[in-house]
Image 1 (cartoon, rainbow, N blue to C red):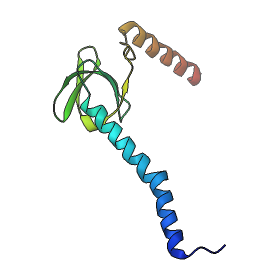
Image 2 (image 1 turned 60 degrees about the vertical axis):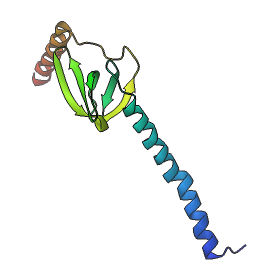
Image 3 (image 1 turned 90 degrees about the vertical axis):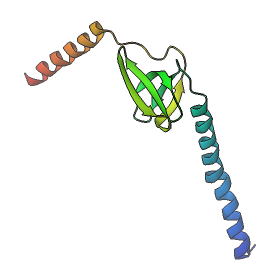
Length: 112
């Protein structure tokens, strides 16, 4: 069975549309809807991997609280996904000191 070249090109375009173009458009639409629906109190992850809770939102920026008393302003386009409520766990000073202490101990062991 020998297909004409025009039919082959059309079939390739249709295949590329359903495998590449259409899913990309769907992801872009979902991301746009996510950004429109952002509100104060939502927990999100940025494209850089920073997890935080939204403390303020305006037209093109959002302010994230990444630790108690530490806020960063990011572009809304830089927000990757919304996390379920309760995902952001505050890091206590004692747990951060314990982690730093265990790293220092493991470094000392490696040096010996």
